[in-house]
Amino acid sequence: MPIIAIVDGYSTGGALSRALCERGVTCVHVRSKEVFADYFLKAFRPDDYAVDLGFVADRAELVRRLRAIGVDQVLAGTESGVTLADTLNHLLGTPGNEIATVAARRDKSAMAQTVRAAGLAAPIGRAFASVEEAAAWYAAIGGPAVVKPLDSAGTDNVHFCRDVAQLRAACAQVLAGRTVYGVPNRRVLVQERLVGTEFYVNSVSHGGSHRIAEIWRYAKRPGPADAPIYDYEEPVDPGSPLAATIRDFVFAVLDALGVRASAAHTELMLTAAGPVLIETGARLGGSTLPDVVAKLSGVSQTLLQVQCLVEPAFFADFDDRAPRWSAAVRNVSLINPAPVAAQSPHWSARLSELPTVVAVAATGAPGAPLAQTVDLVTAPGFVYLAAEDPAEVERDYRTLRRWERDGLYGN
Image 1 (cartoon, rainbow, N blue to C red):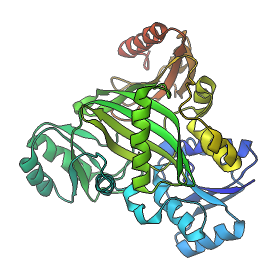
Image 2: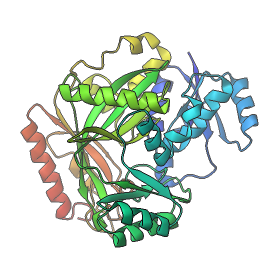
Image 3: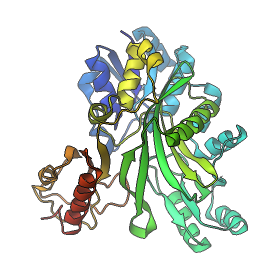
Image 4: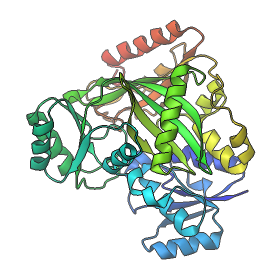
């Protein structure tokens, strides 16, 4: 069995380390920085690791330690670990993504430029170090715009702007803040706002070949101050013509970005002119329960990643065009519409009363405050709904949203 190092085994990295351990893989943990927010640490599973090297500032020393352990490959557990994982694979000589494009796999401005240079569609935009530079560029371009950090994740500090006043305020807020990983925003990304249907694709690459584990259609809604928040997502039939169009585009994007030996989470907008890249992260997708996805579809991105490592023949033989979903499925993000001073002790359990609920990923804290949902980090969790009849899923989704409006979290 291989020895796998995971950089920042937080968020979905917890599911990865668990799945690897269950297959008898030895795991080693590495931190890309010293301190992480509690939001990420909740999913960390220290017992999954034979060795936890923590944060090692000296890169040469870290490589020496990993080589002495006999690490066969380094993977990113979450977005913050992408650059270090790719760099370590390059220095160790282990299978990894192309080092020449490592910056384009984190910096969304460089990502768009790299993808456009390959003849693929990406939003028009630029990165700016000041509000004045951004406002001047926007005044010349005009039109609806999206403002966001260069290298964060989820819907962190994402703003939709319709005029220069909104853009100035949004850029100032981003530049004054930090990413969800605690890193100061030195520059802000301003891009055209795309119009169409948004999808995300969870894939795994091995030896430069790509396989898609899941394609999901996003539904987002305007949150406070018009910022987007997650509503729900539904899977796309992998054997459909729609999936074929998305697959061809995503594989070309992965090639352009040098993704050759890792999982990837790619978001795109299907516009009237065709698919346009939003962004790609060279790591597992988040906000998912891999065991539930595998039960309903036969595979999950996490399962495919692990099988790729321990049984490469499985990856080679995996048909990512075969229809798999056994039911109508909806992954619904929980939305708290207003701040709650003291949480109800029963709201998490009440979600299980919905007839189509197959899994709940939510941890209530009775008596503790609960913030209004303004982004992914402030969502109280998510639930999977599944049934043979899509109407039953829609019914329970509407019931859930009604409960939330009626004070689910504070009653």
